[in-house]
Amino acid sequence: MLPAPRPIKRKGVSLPEVILSMGIILLLAGILKPVAIQAKRRVLEIVSTNNLRQLHSALTLYRIDHDGEGVWGSAESMGLPPVETIEEAFPIYYSLRPPLAPHPLEPEIGQLYWTQWMWSEQDQQSPSWAEYASEAEGHSVIFIDPFVTPPEISPSQGSQNQILLSIHEGGQIVKTRSPGDWRERQFWHNLKRNP
Image (cartoon, rainbow, N blue to C red; front, side, top):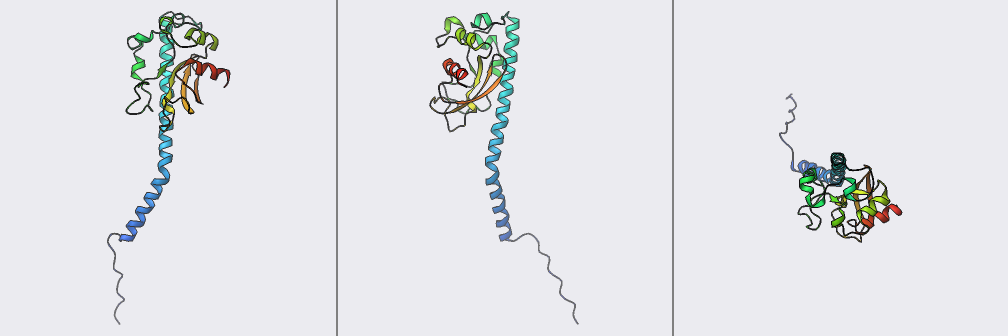
């Protein structure tokens, strides 16, 4: 009697197996992509929060060095650097970029964190910085990151609910979702009254 033939060992994989494996990989990638995008945005938001804290710490040290009083009011009395010379007076401001800022950037917003204070002779906003800071009593907004807003909503559109990350004079980080023109102090003024 002849011995039973040995099974032939295959080398490699068949085409249906390759197609099935690729299908499973594509399905998993499709499921995980939104989760990965959301996780990446969250990490960049944390980076922005840390940047805002660094800016606040640097500004606090600048105020101490330049005899800023612990009072609320004008930029001069608070020891804040002049906005027109901020690059020379406060160089860290130009080294920290909002990580979620788009490419290319919207020209009217720029690539920096939005600054709310302004010295009396340049302040054209309503309320003035002195009025706003005095009424806010240490809770006035110093820096704003408007780029936390999802990319499908333009940060310059005031009618939609934008997501804004801000740091206040006392060092509190606040994440806000509200319609309106966040570049105006009146927006933050009203938000404080109606949280």
